Length: 301
Image (cartoon, rainbow, N blue to C red; front, side, top):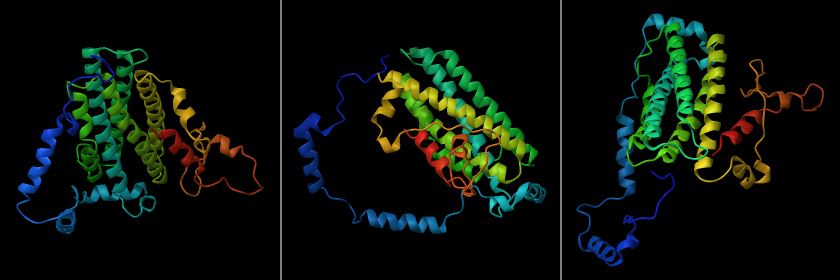
């Protein structure tokens, strides 16, 4: 299977059958809708359902779990002792789903092969094993907090719905390896964002061991994203440098170095070594939020 789109008999566009298209449009005037309505009316129905609906999978945890979660630090989680467990459940659900994505990608690789500059089977396996490691680490962390790793938390339920289309793309026999990688990069972008948030939340809750595990996962996920981006670029016949060359000068990507001991500014962003070394007035703190903006640039498509 070729990785690039091929010319063929794609008849999904209206211009493929001009006369028939005109007849279809004329039919809408001859046979109007059976009842009046508009997009605004549909919105009113959605609002009514939302006001009367229940929360997504919300259930109070056992008292013992509440006590243990409170001991982890309620002040850091906005007075919500279950927030950390909720987000741990979210990450665990996403990592399990991510592992299944790479399992499916491996099958796609074996079925169709790779392309010049694309991933080898060992590359996919390496990432898959790291996804397994992340899931195991999260499973242990939830148990250490007195939680149940099999529970579908509200945030886990949410991400399951958000990412539901990704496995459909990879399991579709019509999609090739390159198209599957374009679906994978969506998951990797979300992974990088959510692991960073979980690391900050666990740090604020005083869970040092969990924080270290999150930092290790972040390093893995950044490497995954870099690799997937490079494979997609190769499959599209461009080099990794093409992305930077097309960016405006004001949005040029920067490289920043972070360590486990990097300080956090007043807005919760980790301050890089480069920013700490920048000359500034005596007593002036690093500019709040600059590190986060820099990382957002790096994470952009």
